[in-house]
Image (cartoon, rainbow, N blue to C red):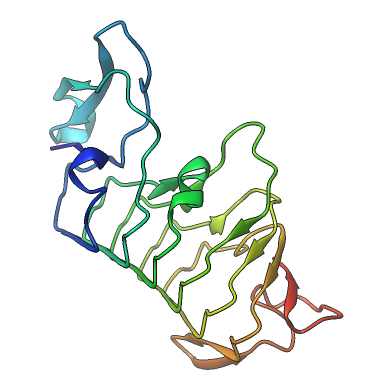
Length: 207
C-alpha cells in the first residue's frame, strides 16, 4: 500500500513500520474534509528508468478531523524508500506522549516534518526523550520552517549517515537536558548548537 491510514493508528501506543517499499505517506492528509468522494493519484515507477509506470488512485476518507495521535509513545520507520516525510506540521500538536522516534534507511526522506502555510506557532514535544536518524541520504533537516521548538525531556539524539542534512530546524530550539549528539564520528558537543553554529545560549539553539 502507498498510504497508511491514520484512522488505523490513532489508538496505538507503538507503531513499527518496516520494509514498506511503496509507502509514500503516513497519516494521510490530502483530501481530508473533502466531500467529492474522490482521491489523489500518483505514478508508481515499475522500473526501466520510468518507461513503465502505473497510475494509482489513493482513496481518502471524507469528513474526518486531522490525525489525533495523543497516546502514541513510540514510532519506528525503517526501509521505506519512497517516504519523503513523516508528519505534517498541524499533526504535531497531537503528539503529546511521544517518547521515542527512530527513522532508518529511508532513501527519499527529505524532512521529518513537512511545512504548512500559515503555521507560525511554537511547537513542544513534552515527552520526547530519544530521537534517532540513521542512514537517510537525502534528509535535509528535521523541519525547514522557522517555528520555535521546545524539547524539555530530550536526552538522546543520534544523527548518523545523513550527508545532506543542512539544518535541524531554522527556528530556535530549547533542549535543557540534551548534553551532546551521537554521530557516526562519536559524541558531538552542543557548545556550538545542534547545527554546529555558534550561539550565545547553549540551550537556545538557532537551528
